[in-house]
Length: 323
Picture 1 (tube, rainbow, N blue to C red):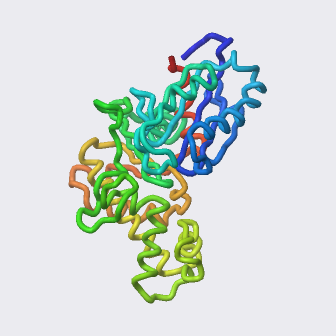
Picture 2: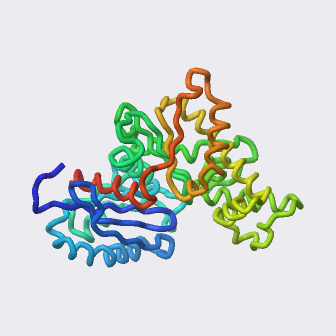
């Protein structure tokens, strides 16, 4: 890490499918300044970067100006660490290949590096959170989609082309699976993300006649929070939805364990706010499907960092290395 006091801060940016959080981070890993914008409101990447710049500019001035900033690190969906591009991200409003690192570097006039948003969260968790001291773990982000960062032998796995770890797009339902934004059918994220929970709710309400408080919500407007609120209030259908979602995740996790034998699977993102509603069925169905050699060994943990901090801190770590 740099010891040059004139370059004593970095910018960490977490671009999610719905919101973007950002912060200015010092050499001790403390987020000094924070902000956020909506990702989805921007029809063009240029307007997105303009608003991001407008949000960060006053924060940069407050810490002493751009001459204090070593670099920018960003975590973003389908971001490729090797190329600096966002490539065909299904949950973003912009299509195709976006040279996000070059665009940010040109706008801010400082070096920029990018990685997958879940990879950034994994780095943040390994450095500051529940994965401190671990050399083998899998980070699963349960938000608009399902992201993942895989750490093995203390190293983040990027793979040959920079895209290793797209566990949200492993096929969990092989026949008659749901259409995913990536173009495939049956991807894990179509069942286990916040949007997947809402899809499950709509399917059940459309095909069954059971009483449920969820019927008071317009079908197209149901969200995972609606399902959570109903489940907490004792709604049987809502509880069933979480049981089904946890079953899908647990079965998938048993497969993930088989190829990297992690010490833990760490869950991060909005869906983790449902606590044991999601955790208990995940653990049950993972254990049920593990090989005997791993039964009772694999921890499932919630992130110990706040939802924004993990990804922002992880992304900021890239800023120190950006060239």
